[in-house]
Image 1 (cartoon, helix red, strand yellow):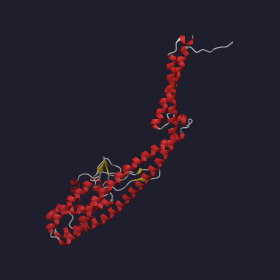
Image 2 (image 1 turned 45 degrees about the horizontal axis):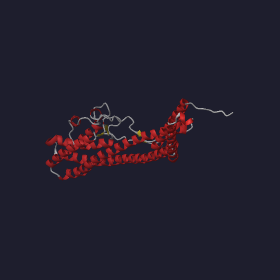
Image 3 (image 1 turned 60 degrees about the vertical axis):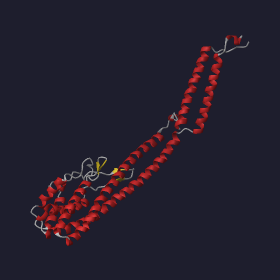
Length: 338
């Protein structure tokens, strides 16, 4: 006797809907994989072992931080170089000229020249307060504060320090002592300098390398430059009250101080240049490592484009066949079986 297994309409409808749902989910998954090139179920693709991709992602994130630090350092170094170049360009022309003028120019010309240099001094003072994106370049680790206070306060402090000096050597010594006075002595560090030289300003741009600069507005290289310009500004402030001999001696000593300060600035700029080169080299290394890690990550989680496209076509064909079958079954009538 022949037996028949029959499937009821309700059961058949459920099976068709289930097949449709499964195929639709597969189609969505494959479509997403084709569009993104990434497997939709990464844990499944890696057999549940996410340690390698997690390690790669962590390293890529760290490299991004290093590159951000390097970019900020690069901007800082470039900005410092521009400021120092502008300052050095000014002082390089002043130093030799005032030494010559001390022996050749009449007193009234020297006083006029001192007034011009006083304005240059104010410009240098302002340049040292340069900030980039709110970060002051010469404040040490107190980057949110301008390194130098009021220029007028500086002049007042210098005049007080020099008061009573009777000759050029005494004036220069008092100016030097005021600029070099340790904290708590009422000199430049207390009255004018607002930065902080004690903290660490160096930043990491890789696992092995940190970059930075210890040059501040209170560094000897810049203080010596300020001393030379301050002495000439004192000449301008004193006017006719300063005798010719003292004035000419101040011109000569200031010129010599500015020439030596220029040499110090050249060395300081060279040191910053080394930091710039190290930063550029490390950026290139970080970029190469990031590229390598990105390729590894892609290998781990990427969907094969050919296999995915083939599977997508097959799934689309299966869905079309299912729709065709569903349509045919929906047109069946009882009379078709009689």
